[in-house]
Length: 134
Image (cartoon, rainbow, N blue to C red; front, side, top):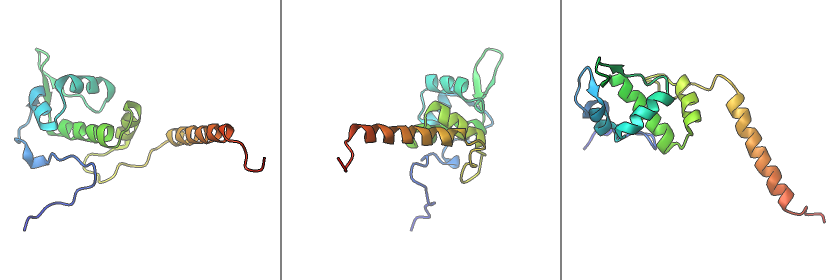
């Protein structure tokens, strides 16, 4: 009988021990491990301040294990949970490595924005349909 760890839906299939344990990984290796093309990884570096690999004098990126974990979390937020870049950036700012769940958002601005959008959509639906009493 297999001892399979319980996985949450949408959780990344990459396990910590499924890739070589080294101090640094090149961008191509990280791409193979995470399934993310290197041009996307370079784009994410610009969008997410938490993702900042070391660079050699010649400009080659050297990722640590922590960077790979951040990449996998970003991938989960964007691809599985369908966050926008902005939403993923905000979520990642409250995420702690190794935590089961991200911390609750510190500000209520995002929540209020979502509520406002939902109410506006409801108002549009209500405006399109005639009232029941007429």
